Length: 445
Image (cartoon, rainbow, N blue to C red; front, side, top):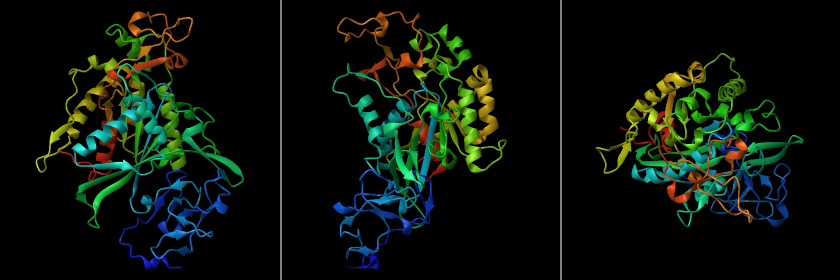
């Protein structure tokens, strides 16, 4: 057998890897490999027949790890939780962004639309984006396919909400008990036009987390289900503040708009959810309850298509400018911050308690308010009275929704037509955060 030194490796390694599953920090040389030999399919922590995790001692002449059964191993895992993590994390630092909000606020729609739009705009600004682990991103790509890759424009589409169990989580056997950990979505982002200290293109691994709104209920965060603990480790936060769930805001819009999203009563205590999320972040960091959170945050105000008439300029400005040095365009933060100032005034007018809570917790200089619409159109509603065969659906304009209470359960009957979906500014929350956290990644004016 050869030794690991027998293969010349010029790759620069990071000092510490932070596991995106359990957030354990460890040096790259402690990275475990996943066995491929048929007789090594059992692991005492990840008990799903996916291969034993081990620290290699044998290598091929090319420097690849071999398991005790002689199998060639290419996939790696965390030495603590034993869940699979990409080897790329040994070479690139990670940027993590956590998305949270109340049930029904549209987090899953925003996340799907955001990643879809980023994949479109990144090449236009000279940035390369790719999956780090396609398997890890399966749920997110399923969302994108549902919204944006339908065979006909009349296809009815809807997304399953983020749940508190199931496919959104990994379950491991850790220290004698089962532990449930949220699955991250992982992407590689590289800007070939910028170089890091080693002279290589500036690049990072972007790690996105989606949180179910129910995870912020009392008792939902436990040692065996630390499902929101990643927020205390996040480099950036996105809070989806659904103004259609705020009483004063709804009243202001009901008299000016016939949009069905203003009908009925579909409200959650978003201020309480936000306060609970911030309390957890400070607690998991070991900070005092009165401390400020220094993490940059974007307050995403979704369903903009339903309340755009409240802005002085109903058409949002372009967040792009021509790059004077290249033939591409670049991000224009000034345009975003100008809109942010206007949205802050709307929050001051209609949700002063929420605004006060945000600004007493975060640095205003690192807080950005962004209007978004994952679909760019209002939802349609399945008929309340269906035909005998149970399959007939009526257009939303054909039924009177004034007497239909849009509860959370009722919202699940909403759908969109594929041909009507046209996202508005959904890429901006991520771009604005990346521009603050890693400015070398995002070409900006």
